Image 1 (cartoon, rainbow, N blue to C red):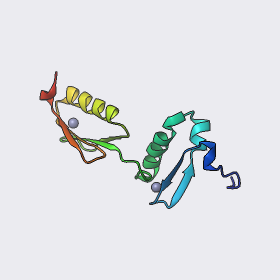
Image 2: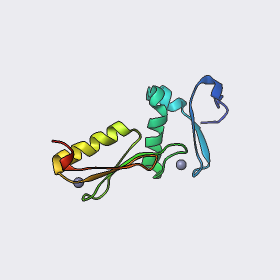
Image 3: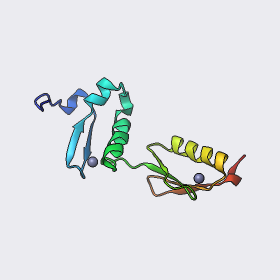
Image 4: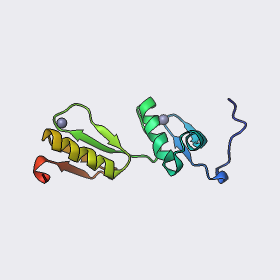
Length: 114
Ligand SMILES: [Zn+2]
Ligand SMILES: [Zn+2]
């Protein structure tokens, strides 16, 4: 591995930076190996969180947390977050709190639908 093949941004390869790691990555690996396409940034962000415990810059997840169960889930888009909340409520009848990137909070309860 060497850095001398550093690809300029003009290649259209997205880059992601993380101020906590003080690093910047070119997502050529994600594009080539994972065929992640325009989801490369999302895939990278998820991997980064999985391995470091935090997200790169400019990535704010949707956080879904059950009021009764420990833990929770994080998603980079509203749709899967709401799907998780709806499914959890459906199976457990627990209230689930959804925190959006802009600070929006939403609670899904069993009464919301059937
Ligand atoms: Zn980082
Ligand atoms: Zn629960």
